[in-house]
Length: 202
Image (tube, helix red, strand yellow):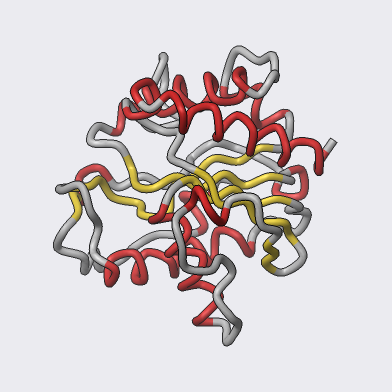
């Protein structure tokens, strides 16, 4: 299965994102093998930096570094897929500013909802940053459920235990992009969260 053949934004109604950066994972995978879904913020400014782009894309490189920080030996995104880890973003287009409008996150969460529904064996969902947290909360609200992650700073809530439809949910910090190399304290917490998540699927 290739996710980009299953879900697609048809109308591109959001006005605060770059539609030419639109990206949905095109990697070929078996849905039943995915046990951990890691959701980052938004697509990168260049599609060449997306997780599954050829070469050494920025999002792929920083994500691999995050898993190495957590003690996982791997050399490629394919290694992560073989571990049962699927990478995606909450917003499928690129950012035009630091923040993304709540309406845009809600709109794009409809694609995320269909994306998550495609994986019947998911045990862990990692929400990498506030946008991912908002997106999953929007999905839950649309389904008539309470918000998955409570309001509050990630630093205060990240050690709580949260669930969505049988999967354990970890709120964490953004691992995709240049900020990963700058904020060393967050990088340490990301590694701790990944290590805790992986213990649940091994």
